Length: 230
Image 1 (cartoon, rainbow, N blue to C red):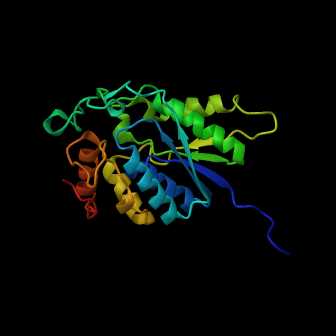
Image 2: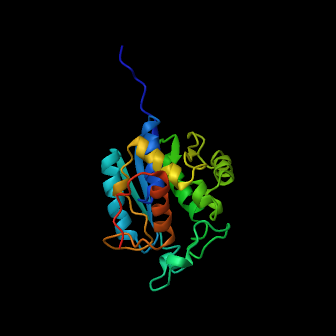
Image 3: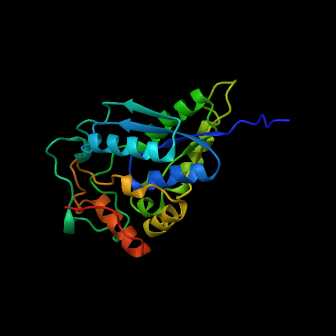
């Protein structure tokens, strides 16, 4: 007799960056059929992120790529305000104390996670994979295990009677950037296709917080960095 069991579905909340791409690759490795969900929120790197999403989704064989657009965050932070400066170079201390930087986007993971969960419920996905990690959790409270745990408790009360609540899966939540790079290398994640930079352009700037974390991750992991920087 044939096997009638369906492959379980997962929605992967992806920015086009390194962490969420490794998390999406882990979803595949865990046996899920994946769809990619990306939010366009007026970020400076919006166009470049869209290109990365398309390339990553193709490499991973995603069954669908879904974009959501919101103007809520426009002009709220330097990431969504044209001409607003972003900390660069020595203004960034990726090894410093737990201080949330000016690039914080208010309640972003709460909002984006809710949007991804809504999409997941609509397609019957069991999981929402996210790239939350310990490296960013040092400065961003919405990357920490406590956030994931409480969000999942909320999801149990947030879906229809005929739905099974999707569960947020954060496979990197206890990992630092070098560990994420190592995991991505082991899983064969398409890290060369990802875009981490806060700015748009042909190449990563190499100086913003996201670029500095990326450089550090590959360097400390001992994995060749495929990224071209300015």
